Length: 157
Image (cartoon, rainbow, N blue to C red; front, side, top):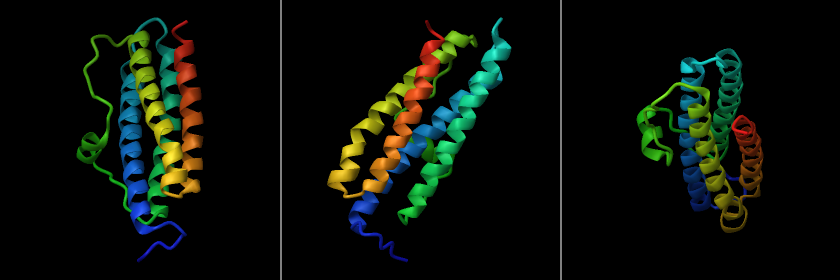
């Protein structure tokens, strides 16, 4: 069925493609945050365990809204680990330590990378693809990631 919402089909496809990449990034970040929650060690274990839990729960909500946005535009959301790993620009790597500082620095770097990618696309969605809704949606995600990055960064002071 054709999605007739005032955006050309080729633009819908391009927007969905960018959202699929964003979904993959978010899922990889979610997984890395969940890993931090499960494997954190040290004197600050309990506080950081709860902190990482709050962050991965927030990312879980983001993942769902992105997938639903993709469906709203008439496209399908990927949902396999293989697809996510082929689409993400984030990396999976083994950390040398399970302490909070190592996890926080890694997760902060990923949030900042996602922020850059989101910021690069806001204007394209609105101007080039004529999709103000997705532009606004991405702006909302940007604000959430800015706050999450701030929370992580504050632990490093």
